[in-house]
Image (tube, rainbow, N blue to C red):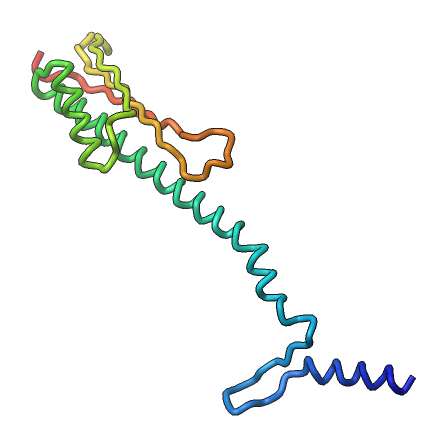
Amino acid sequence: MHGLARTRKDQMQATQPHQQPGGWHIRLSRNEKGQGIIEMVLILPVILLIMAGVFDFGRVIHAYVVVVNAAREAAFAGATAQMSDSELQTFMDDELARGGVSSGTATSVIAYALKGIPPKQTLVIDLSYEVPLVVLILPFSDITVTSHAEMITFWN
């Protein structure tokens, strides 16, 4: 019994903090030395996955803002000056490139319609872009952001 009590006392002393010239230090017992590494190995993949998700979310929001801006700017440019569909498409591609978005996966629909009372000619632009994701554990590999812009033409 005396030997058992002595080992418990030794274990308690081994984990008690003690004062050193550099500050407080905790002595680790033989069983606790690799605990920090094991905890880091277990939690590091989760932290990296969360960081990649935040990165992807930021990329999607950035692409959405650029797509909305490109559609609005093209609609405004086409409403103020008479432009062909190819000129409007080039204008949208330039706006997407200026925002740092590749126009390769962007699709657009450019149409004119009579809207309102009394009916006025309106330029309608629908623009969509597929954002490829970095985190590939999701059941989908890209997210599509879309924008719809309408402007009454001034040149009519």
